[in-house]
Length: 334
Ligand code: ACO
Image 1 (spheres, rainbow, N blue to C red):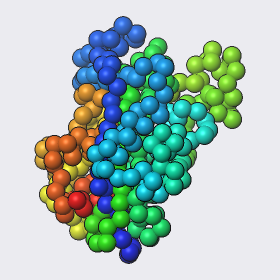
Image 2: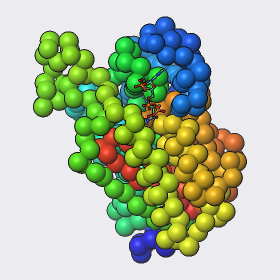
Image 3: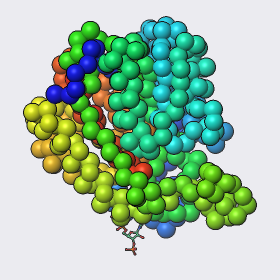
Image 4: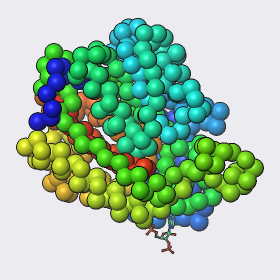
């Protein structure tokens, strides 16, 4: 099992928020040369949600944070840390996590954003767990939130069909039983591949000018085929590594919550672990790829369906821009 630690870092509450507006494949067909059939067959996506133009990512993250507080009944003043994983922050700075912290009155918490694209939530969750396992903190809020519609080029069929907006999050709390909560993780980055998926404009490399906007550099660009090949291998590989290292097989998992980028990537990972379909969370059909939002949204849905019991093993795996990939094994603690 994973490294020695003093306490368990246990997920005690989950919540998610999805915008009301449903954007069907038929609506996307009005923007680019694509078809409902192509999108369904190649990605598994049927529809996605888009947030209103005048609502930022923090709108979704704050909804999730409020819901976590309401559902759990915890005093916001008892929260030690708020981490928001996002690549679509409201502004470069301050962090969207600070906006969330202010909105819920978590005045004793420090707050920061973590940027690791589609691996963002898993990276944030494992980072937060360290503070709990080593005894520094008792209660941390971890949220994954992205308004991908704010960086989508609705004239680029290679990208605009794939993404949606959404947010999810968890409360992570100290347990006196160190065998509960985060058991093990494996995280990687490959910075030699920054070009295959990025937003080039608006940062310090290409500060926003009329030219960067004319060249549409403020939108997501990707080499879909390269990302697909990478993701289909890595999601399966890293998930299997974490299981095997802990003497587990797919049969021991109560639930696998993968990042939702493409149905074919999810199926390949489930096959590699010999996982029956009913142990794999899939919601890409309704919500598409919400980047840092996919895993906590799916986890929150699973909890609403009462799919996890104390002692169950849960595996969460993400792959995304960077490139980044990570997998976290939890033993459910509540
Ligand atoms: N509608 C119709 N045709 C399309 C569309 C579309 N929306 N998009 C691409 N095509 C065309 C291409 O132009 C290409 O045509 P060509 O052969 O004439 O050049 C053809 O379809 C096949 O393109 P491929 O890229 O080979 O199609 P593929 O089966 O790989 O599917 C996809 C493309 C869905 C983008 C896939 O590569 C994918 O899912 N990649 C993962 C990317 C991803 O999700 N990234 C986001 C986050 S990172 C992460 O989470 C992993």
